[in-house]
Length: 71
Image (cartoon, rainbow, N blue to C red; front, side, top):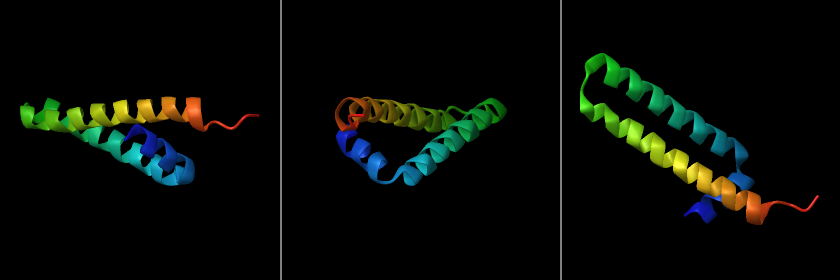
């Protein structure tokens, strides 16, 4: 999964940037709703964002190690 996303980010960097913006937006909205409404159901958005960040980090590590061009 990490390998496929790393390859995807190499081929389509703009879509990766859009994914990052969506995850950041979900995180911000979830934190705001959690603080404002005090309902734990909004913690699902935070969990989604954290899992996405882990996936982005692992894909970035793979990309740096195996997909980097020798310059």
